[in-house]
Length: 200
Image (cartoon, rainbow, N blue to C red; front, side):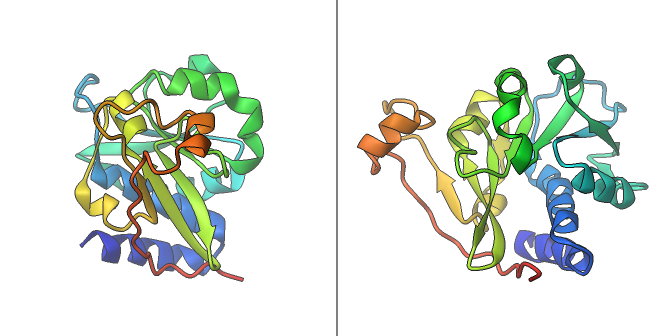
């Protein structure tokens, strides 16, 4: 069950720090997303991180010996667009969001699961964005962004998201923040609670 598996990973990490919880989530997200089959089946599954060194360090402690669809998992620091080749997941830390526009712009043109942590995360192209609700670490998902990147998000992951942004047929781009503010009802919202207590 996706909620149980996410909660177990996050609960184990939570005894250390919120950054460890994020690292656990990043690995778990990979279990519920389908990427286009382009790279060799024996190639490493790469989780890229920029602007979140503590998350990268926790990932490096977490992933040895783990795999995604039979592929070994590696962690890569990313700071330039040239370093995006081979990356499957890219996490942009909250302090790096505003200074990574070009990196994010390139990432959304690739089959990369872009994960952010910013109030404008989904507007900024993210497929998944971490949010905090009542001291709980949660996440929202944009299916429009997933479709754009050629990714398929499992319905089990959608069911535990705090918010799922969908694009009705014929609607204009919901990632356009100005449109969202003028017509807030155009993207349907689905709420579901994830019982993950953030450490005080």
